[in-house]
Image 1 (tube, rainbow, N blue to C red):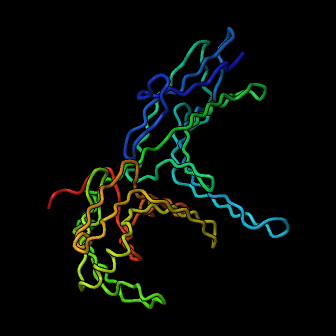
Image 2: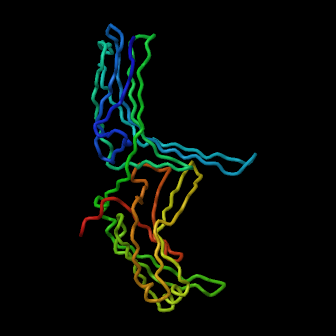
Image 3: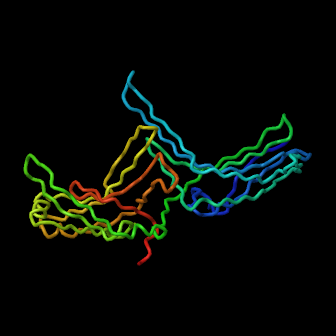
Length: 298
């Protein structure tokens, strides 16, 4: 006799699909309590909570020299009492099913869900119904959900500004350094399918050396995990293009942004996990920000 079942149902969830929301979206649902027995059951409160947390965890060394690096960071904390009163008087619910609707507005800038062997970003919605009687069980329910990768570049007008990076000549034992040249981007924010235009300026010898090396120009992803003063990073090539062996081909390079890459930095509220992007030309890095909503035309 008492709370037989506690459920969380959501308006936007379709049967058999993961529960997911975008930053800034409204999460609407209801706590459904099933009371069994033949008499009313007294509850003091029903509280719904939404939590988001980033966690990092990895090991270095081995044996006696093994060290573990761990950190956590709270990203989201929302609470709502859907049943209860200031006086603390219990509410008697008759047997049957009872629904208590709730609604939360997610922040417009929120770190997206992420899972990696060295860290993760996870979210969950939970409900707890507290009974008036010491001998009765509290009702609990917990449902994980995902925050989708969304970044509106139109809200970051500074990304429409051009970027120029100059490379200086460097010593090379083999004498293969291309020497100084300058790289130029017309803007710094891009979305999937857009083309990153990279212009290079410099002496002819620089383009001849680049062409002779016949390397690739890469868009790279860098994920950094932090735990106190310790950091761990992973890198991979998200996209690449080979300009070729013609010096003129290195003066203007076009690189298409692939799908599924979104920058995650401190602006999302997460400081222990970051996902950044940059274009690599030879040994020069050009930072870019990848989003899901493009910049507005100027």
